Length: 398
Image (cartoon, rainbow, N blue to C red; front, side, top):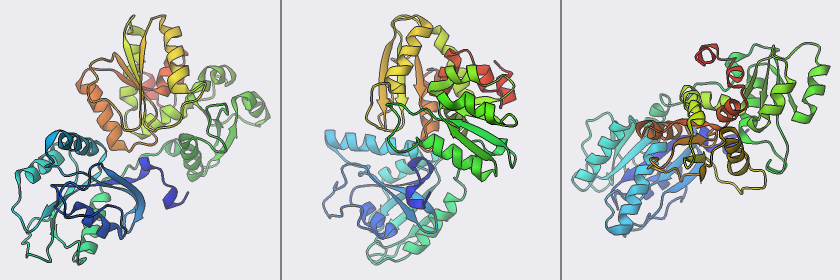
């Protein structure tokens, strides 16, 4: 996988924030060396967040986010400010752009407070240094000129230094393997599978297995029994797509560890413990309860889609209750979760760790149980304890 193919969830998200006309868009263009954002002297030119996935030296793969002015006014302005606040949920590094020719405003100070409250590493950038000398004594700050290029290289170096401390050093599964182990990956191919390729969690898991110097065998659930029979020795573990959990658990011997891509992704994104605890709420659902099924990506839903079809059907069959199902996808995760009795989230492969933490924390603060696809499906198939066997400390709690 090249840097340009790096998924959004694995990129460092760098958000540029500030008041209207502080020069955010000009600075984004100067830092990236591209005309990514529209630049104008008219206040409020950036009306929606602008996203750009790219390679930014010396950082590597990043996602740049140019946000609307935080001091925008009126009804539309309030919506833009709301979008800006939402961007903070996924921001790994914040760049606060201040017009160096004007006094620091309360809007700027509020943004700094938000960065600190959300524990987001940040840099304060005094733009337009070519027009005015900006004395800077704070190590978190730097004076630059987007117009002349003054100190743009130094700014990128500062961002890179913060990025070194914000990365995710977790492994998906590689830390559980030894060289020459054999892992079987079960990947159903049905109408909902993307044509000509594997879904991202399967790709990432396969790569992590190979990075551990282990061997991976990829098979469909219909060929799994044959694959196991032809092995001279049992595999180290079997990892399956969640939707095939029921069938696969009947084929794989109890002596062979079994888990799912979704469970591994919950661990990788840092919310496995929460998701296991949240699954217990499934048995407490009552008639009329509403369940939010949320996906981090957007895609065309097809017949047999796991989020919109298979999970709702399994929930209603398992609970025997008349449930209301609400679907969300992409960036449209509700801020108010009070209408919901349970949130079931996808593995979050397209979301970075900070946004998954935000979504989990939003549910936690509002007292709404939060779990994910793989854990919910394992629970409803009666194999949750088994599927967590590779994590003995967690399995022993069930």
